[in-house]
Length: 79
Image (cartoon, rainbow, N blue to C red; front, side):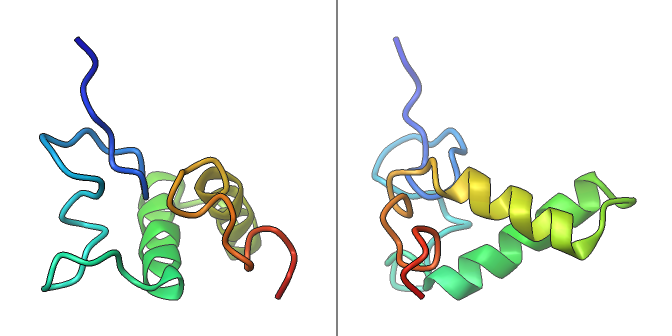
């Protein structure tokens, strides 16, 4: 049996489309800029020696693989 994953960050979840880290108080998916900033901060804790530029590039590349973000304008070069 496959464990469902959050469509925003890939974290394993019990049910639904998004984990609690990717949703707001009402359960809706956070705005892209909010989620992006949180993911960059998470990456910075994992890779403290990486530059901000590299952390942002890695985060953009990862989020572009997630169903919630793969067509987001900030990831496909439209903005």
